[in-house]
Image 1 (cartoon, helix red, strand yellow):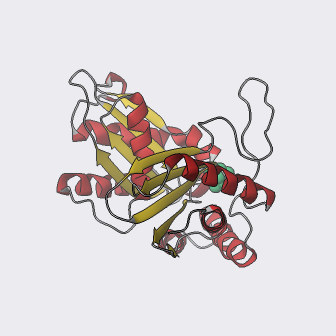
Image 2 (tube, rainbow, N blue to C red):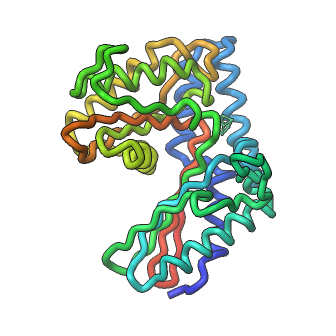
Image 3 (tube, rainbow, N blue to C red):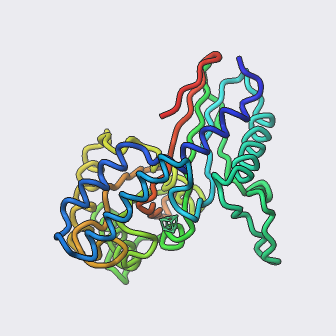
Length: 291
Ligand code: SF4
C-alpha cells in the first residue's frame, strides 16, 4: 500500500484540468453538429472543441478559470484521513506551481490571493468518507466560478414559478434556473440537481451527483424520465452556446433525491459549464488507475 499519494493526486489534478473526459467531449461534438452552419452558436462550439483538442495536446488548462477543486475521497480504514488531506493539499499546491491550476484561493475580506490554491479548511473542498474494502477512490471536480455563480437553490413550494412539492415542481424550478442563467456560466452545460437535505447538504449533493457517469441511467425511473425531460426542455429555450441562441443549452441532467425534514423541500441546482472537468483515481494495493 502506498503511503504517500501526492504525486498520484497531482496527476489526477493535471488530467482533470487539461484533458476533458471522452463522454463529455462526445456530447460537445454532437452539440456542434446540431447547430446551424454559419451561426454564432456553431462558431462558439467550434472554438470550444478546438480548445479541448489543444489543451489536451499541450497539457494546459482547458479554461483560464481552473475553478474550485472539489475532492470526494472514499478511503479504506487502512488510510489515515488526516494524512490524505495533507497529501491532497500538497498536490494542489504543486499543481498550482506547475500551472495546471490558476491561483484561485482569495481571502474573502482582504481579497489577498494565497498564490497556491490553499486557503482554510474549506479551500480546496475535501469530502472524506471511510468505506469497507481496500480500494481508495478520489474523485475530483474543478468547478468554475462563472457556472457556480448561476447555481440556484429553491425552497418549495415556490409561488413565483408555481412550483409545488412534487417532481413537476422540481422540473419548473430547474428550468427556471436555466432560464435565469441565460447562457452565463458558459453554456452548453450539465445540471446537477439535488432534491431534499438541508440547504448545505442539498447543495453538496447537487455537486456530488455531477460525478455520475455522463451516459449512465438513473436507477430511479421517475428521475430518469425527469432528467431527460429537463434536458430536452432546456434545449427548447433557445439560449444556446454561450447564450448566442441555438439548440445546445444543456447536454445532460443528473438528479439525486435525498432525505429531508417534513418542513423543508429544497431543490438545489449546480450548473456545470461545458468545461465539465471531472476525473477519478482508483488505487487498489499499489495499482493506480485514472478514468
Ligand atoms: S464557467 Fe467554466 S468555461 Fe466558463 S469561464 Fe468559468 S470555468 Fe471557464
